[in-house]
Image (cartoon, rainbow, N blue to C red; front, side, top):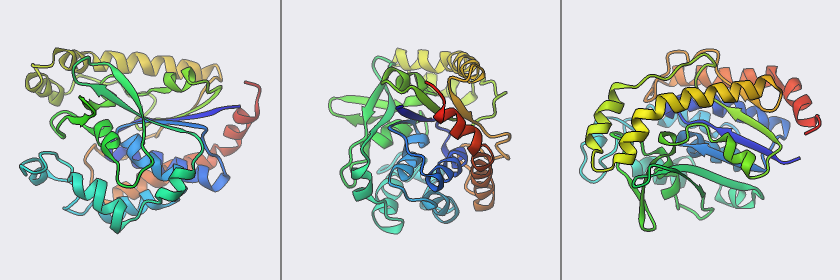
Length: 285
């Protein structure tokens, strides 16, 4: 058996997923292949470093901190992103809430971040470096239009992977995973619509027609992907976790109490469904 875990993005809503994978750590469930999008990979690495509770502490202590995110960081010429890049991706994991790079390096599986090539508009699946402080791939996967600037990796520029492949479970299957867990940050009945931010982004990125196309087609692609995923779940091919409710947590939610409740909802759902999950994992591929 080769176990793949896919974590959808969703910025602050991803605390639900953090609760799910913390329950996995308690049960000794570890992926052989891990792929995430945006916050799904940025938070997911703490599962791979076996730091149970780290993301909960992040949500309660640092996400409400004004140094973490807010409009003032977007208008800071040195940052130009809604999230304070140096604080979120350097100071927090390096000093304030240390990320265990040694344990992360020991993880024997493959760790992949989904990003979107700004020129082609296509998804690329980049391995996440195991070096201390090398977080460009994570930042690129999180780089939503308007909220972030494009991120340069090598000779190319990238934006959030969710623009081109919001739930990249098919990449895990392509990589040979015969058992797959997908952790969503939206309810099963959620239907994506074209957001006002998407229309604004389309005007801002008119120099990159493939990105504009991604933005326009994202709702259609997302909804089709969800239909396929839930059909695969119905057939017993994939095990899906999804919040029954996002509890009013938006993309940039910073209230510690709301974040903690959504984390707890993910943790409790995983514990309640653990027997069913183990039956799925132990069944014939």
